[in-house]
Image (tube, rainbow, N blue to C red):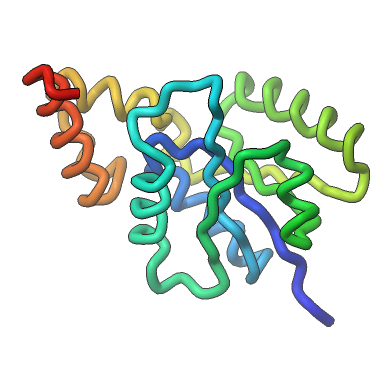
Length: 167
């Protein structure tokens, strides 16, 4: 029996330890996964797609069966093109559920053969979001333990450039 290929999509701006926790949990169920970075032209990310790919590749180094990719299309079209049939999403709070439920139902309407699987992170990450990480880093707070050392360094560099007017 062949394993099911799952896609874990997101903007990952930046990739946090909460995202990594979801991937580790998902890998126990889906030994073949793609972490798919959404370009999201409607958002203005801090990190480029290439930087986000680099960050995630660094974070998942050593994890078997995980490929990192970017996509610029409708999620269900990307999932089908990759030969996958499952979309993995993390749920931290009720507000996540409302948004993810709506998206899952829209995706099901477009592509009934793609299933959404929702996973909860460890309690230590239930409050964690990329937005909060960026805000804390911008204001000079520490994000140690919330993101990888690479993300810590890259955030510091980005915000140093921002503060000096070079960004």
